[in-house]
Length: 190
Image (cartoon, rainbow, N blue to C red; front, top):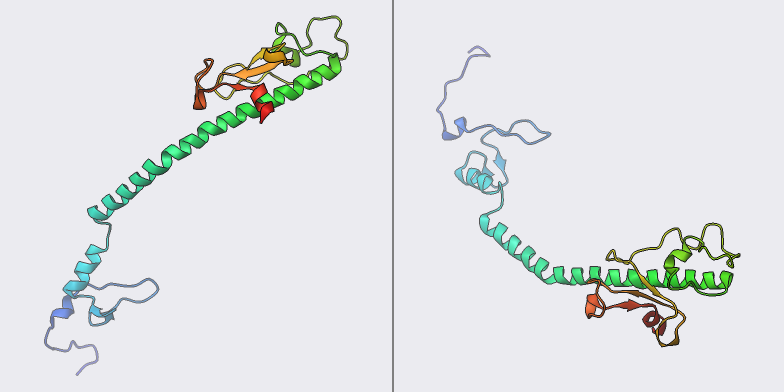
């Protein structure tokens, strides 16, 4: 019999199974095993089809868990953002108070209510002020974290030399929680 002559033999059902390959290896013959199942077996093809993605039930469970987490954690995160703005307002008022104290050391008095906080940025038109630094005490008068200007009063209430006030989130006098006023004298008391 010649060497390249086809040999006649019986056909088996596995002879016509599709050839599959693994990365880095040659094609597997249909009779080779992949795990415990034959590559051409029906259970292998069903399992390979089933492992393509997530079921609708799995996706719904994940979405429900995410919804619960957002519902429970979301409000707490938003409270932290609100309290952060209050802390920024406290720090800004403290910075303004420090600049006002430096102004008093140089000039001898606090700015009047008419001069306001702008006296910390630009020298007032008062000819008696001679020790004013060339660049002022601040580059600009800051606004509170809600975009409203700080209110300055000199003299302040209850015998204080000055008061600096932010009306909080609502921008109106009074209020509670995040809408509460933030004052320089309440910061000094803490």
